[in-house]
Length: 185
Image 1 (cartoon, rainbow, N blue to C red):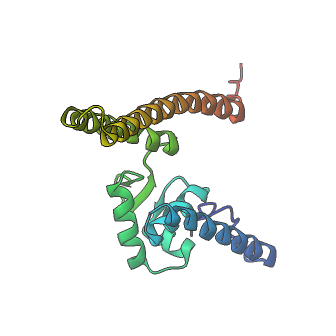
Image 2: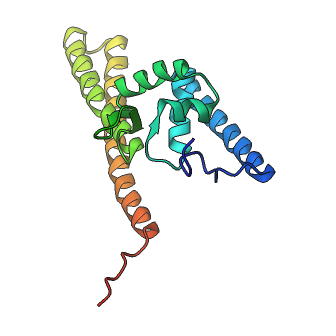
């Protein structure tokens, strides 16, 4: 693993460093279980948890394999899926021979929520079409109307929540950034 590229490890081989590495890896595994419980296959879940936890911005497949203590072959399919669903980006440094993977977006969570919004538009379209076919005074129509209204409400709340999160994230991030260095003058 590259110096400083791991998951908060200094690269030292002392006992406290190993204990820290083990604690961080346990956290990565617990984090990955949350992703897996949410439907992401196990190895892509582990890779995603590792990438979010690691200090490095980009990782080679070998970095990921070493960090997760798995074979490079296990990493291959995981990063392919994560690139396909646009959670990770695959890129190559000019003149380099090795692919690197990084988060597709800096604010991955707001991006993921934003990607869901068109799905809710489609729900509304389908439910509205369906209501045109159903007798208005029947229970089935009432349930479909209620379902459509739920998804309208949910979409609006997600949109507002995402906007509030974006503003909050900018405020929190700007508070944490170090002040720019003043040029000597």
